[in-house]
Length: 168
Image (cartoon, rainbow, N blue to C red; front, top):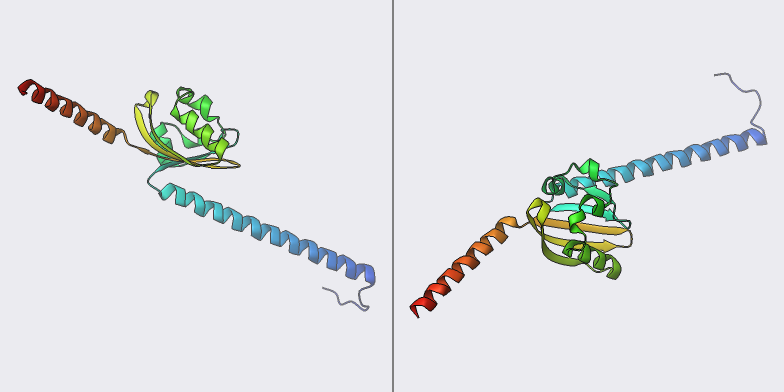
């Protein structure tokens, strides 16, 4: 670099100050973006580690996130669900407890918990849905085995009661 024989004039100083300010802001935006992306990555890693299935819907009922456990239980590729309408993807849920409870949660902004059967997948689920102004966060677990055991126990109990009445 060449040595300057004269000091910077006012317009050159202003240019350097503006350039430094612009570079500083650009650097701050980049750092903020990288921190935000790292936080999102940590959040997604946390959601993948939980045992429950989890998905998030926006306020237009579109999937914004689906963890691997949810995708496996729903028998779908999580990437294919992103941006898709939950009711278009799972039309058998329309008019059932899923739709009723999800809509109630969004309307009241109060969480809901329920058990329900989704016939197309032969799947019993235990569901908790947490609303926000932006959408719905849904945690669910496969309770199909437990529900089947309960039905077997109910049948056995009915048989025992029938025998007791017959011996009566």
